[in-house]
Image (cartoon, one colour):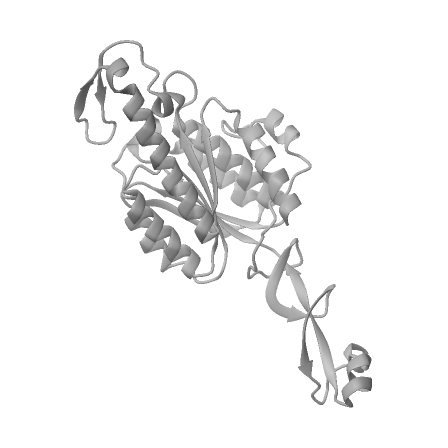
Length: 296
């Protein structure tokens, strides 16, 4: 594979033994790592159904026959591939950086590695770039050529427009017809209650959701030294700030903002991961995937 800006060989080497495995039932097409809602005759028992003419006798449950004198076939879960969609926020606020990687660059690295891992394990991955509307939508595929195109799209994208997270999510929820894994990467700068209702919309449609909440350290701590004027990257509005005067109240509000998401996501069974751009993305992702594999 050619070199891509957001796909670093060192990060891939550190994550080489990890897999992104679905926790809930998904719908797929080929043999893979994930439980399917479609019943077959593979390894894990699912349920019984009554015998009908033409069924293979080798799948009869003879213990049930002996107890009840009725004929039942044992059905099993098939193992199937996963369909995943990466929903990446490319709004103006994602362009912020207090010194290192911007939130957007961090998110692109994360999206690139996740896409690589999914394609490597023969799963299908799509990409949605959004701000106030969907800017790009690549349907899920599992071919290496598709991964190359996805990585090119990440390199060609720049953040800039205003945010409309909740509205975009509601629109998308009506378009994902099959149960799938949705990986959201965003700073979530929209009304939390509206965003949480949109996440519930995804869950109502039976999709599995992983939410990476990406922020800059300065946004979490307001670690500015002197009085300054903050400029909104989306609407260019300006706000004079005395950091030493407002820092305590600001940090409390940020903590409340994060706890609102954490609590609601936990209740909705949405995987919620907060990170800041000073945390190496591959170490953060490795810790999460290890935990996810153990919990499964």
